[in-house]
Amino acid sequence: MTIVQDTPNVADEAATNTTVKHWINGAETKGSTGRTQPIYNPSTGEVSAQLALGDVTTVDEAVRAATLAQKAWGRTSLAKRTMILFRMRELMITHEQELAEIISAEHGKTVDDARGEIARGRETMEFVCGINQASKSEFTADASTGVDVHTLRQPLGVVAGITPFNFPAMVPLWMHPVAIAAGNAFILKPSERDPSASLLVARLYQEAGLPDGVFNVVHGGKETVDAILEHEGIAAVSFVGSTPIARYVQQKGIANGKRVQALGGANNHAIVMPDANIDFAASQISSGAFGSAGERCMAVPVAVAVGEAAEPLIAALKKEVEKLEVGPGSAKDTDIGPVITPAARQRVLDFTTSAIAGGAVAIVDGREVTVKGYENGFYVGPTILDNVTTDMEAYRDEVFGPLLVIMRVETFDEALELVNSSPFGNGSAIFTSSGELARRFEVEVEAGMVGVNVPIPVPVGYFSFGGWKDSLFGDHHAHGPEGFRFYTRAKVVTTRWPHQETAGSASMNFPGNS
Ligand code: NAD
Image (cartoon, rainbow, N blue to C red; front, side, top):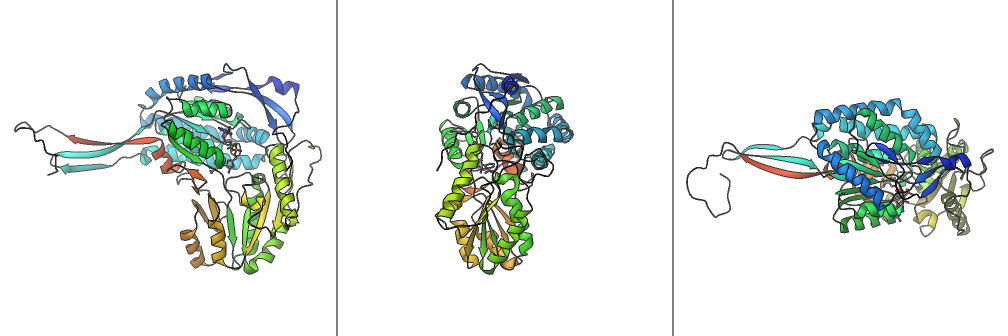
């Protein structure tokens, strides 16, 4: 495999002078490290700005501001909290285009695709606008004579989120609205590849009336992440990213006494049965495999064609892919933008080349794609490989690029076995017109999110999101009700009013209920 530098060496004088800063206690700050790293526009390959890098001191500054702010925020009434959250939701709508353009410029996805991720992220904001319903506690009257029992769920304090490049708005939005609505202060460490969306979100929170210090952003890579995982003032960490880093974050976070949910990588399979509507399945799988250049944790990089489904499915997929335009994220007619770095591009090329060398057949080969006027962009065209075997990297590893592999099997049972043999268990889908098989699939598949004739079964914001096996380390899924449980801890209160035990001596026996 060719080793390619992670980021190219194109430096633009003006861009070098723009610094994306941290956001601590309601204001931008460069921090004290004096270190920066370039941010690229993957569509052009050029440097768009410099990112201020944090360290232990930056994280500590954020934790101190957050700790102070949380004391008051945690006691702020639900009525006042939700008023701010409703305003934030409105601001996210009025600023949607601006946010989408920021995302597209640093990630490379199209502006419309970015608007889609904002809309899906906003669902979490909508869920927490009703946090007064979602956070209702339990109450039992007369559990014993004159004794009532109720539960409380209280905020943890200061919590942090560490997020990946592929959804710079949506994935953080799975976390901070729930954490904040539950009364916590939040520190976000966004991806260093596309950090600017988080700063606009910070400004919008301020405009919505969120007290300074409740939402903070610190930038950086491993050094900043380690500082978060080691800081005593942080009670819990939500992570979303690749499996090796998810595993690392969970283990280190737990070793430092934190509550951790760490969502990892994926390799989602879609089974296509011969009784499926094949054209429909092909268009859905094409969008799942190639949308956002395949850089979605709920992408569909593996189509499992059962029996006679294979030939018509391949023909229909080929037709779908021939319609797709590869181009810059900012262009109106682009369907597929660039991938995030030259190294990500090279990975797709290498996986494709080695699969073909091993006997795979290219139905569509995107390796030679170039985009006129954007020759330095990190483009790779949509690629479909047939005759792929389970020992090939293109099948085994998470590709995270616009590469779809077709696996041929003879029966539903073989297909299910293939899906369940994957170490990942994020999402999985079946295309069929058989209710019986769909139900068997739903029950027997080993994945956290399941689609029936739906290729990317990303749950709506008032359900929770999460995978199984190497796709999630920890006990809680993200956002929705599980997110609320993750960011709160339970208290059970037993009360007796008025106090009636005036006479008699104290019993040393464990008290029973009567
Ligand atoms: P990544 O694991 O490289 O980075 C994720 C975060 O971890 C970033 O904030 C990064 O700065 C930090 N990080 C990177 N290397 C680190 C290290 N050595 N030590 C500590 N922190 C480190 O992931 P990515 O490339 O940004 O995103 C793509 C990955 O995220 C894919 O594997 C994708 O499947 C996964 N993902 C999963 C979900 C999900 O819900 N399961 C959702 C989105 C993305």
